[in-house]
Length: 156
Image (cartoon, rainbow, N blue to C red; front, side, top):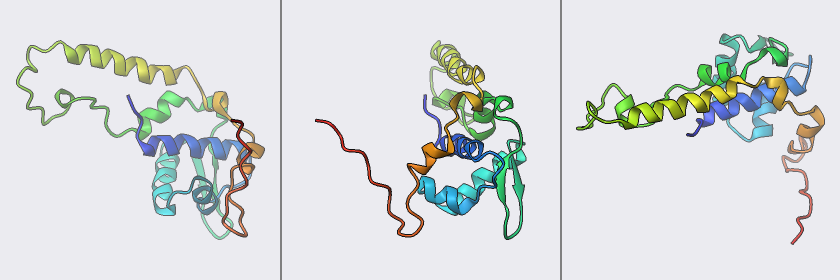
């Protein structure tokens, strides 16, 4: 099982917005933090806003913030809102042409596995995976230089 990059970044956007508290977070700073395009991030923020997880403020000093308390944002619901395709194999698609589909026992097993995978997220809220704003500050590229912060030395 694998989440799409879209869902991965949606969860990261929520984590960052949650860490910022009441401060409005901008698309630009979030795109810089995660090193992704602003256009892609705009799509993610729009989906999260339309789903009621973010509140957007337009204008020059606009941005976005959480629309709900972190405890009220269920991760399973976020995954369902952002994953566009749960078709693990061909037989889960409308264009299925598998010759053994009518007799195959694999789809039942795969569906059970998918349900378990997604339902695991139902047991957690955004509050369970929150980081502090300081945690993000350690990862943000310097605004002046665009350089990443120095990494800690690794032990051999």
